[in-house]
Image 1 (tube, rainbow, N blue to C red):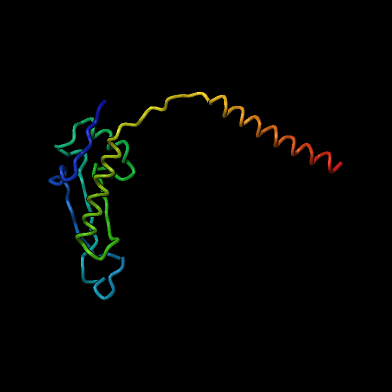
Image 2 (cartoon, rainbow, N blue to C red):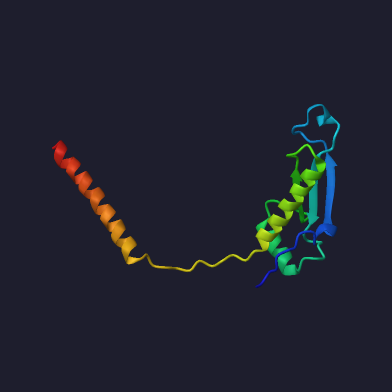
Length: 138
């Protein structure tokens, strides 16, 4: 199952934003400026994602998606609404692309002869060290 990487700005038409007052830094303007950005993306109603991609995103990001199938992200790190919006959009695309990136299967390997010998040598040295401690006390 091959999945393609979602390009930046390709899902912008399906993203909704809302703005509110941030609880973060801002000094005198903290109660005046709506610098907090909330991003909402309806995964299940998306027209740009295939059904397979929707299922993958719903499965892998289920802790961030509510019962209606809406992915919700918010950002309030900066004083600027524009910077917060850019950061939230970047985080959104990073999340989607990470979820859609296929998981690499682990290839089983055997330890090399040198690593086995090194481990056994280390075990033997530790054993001898503890053995010497026993004879020193008794």
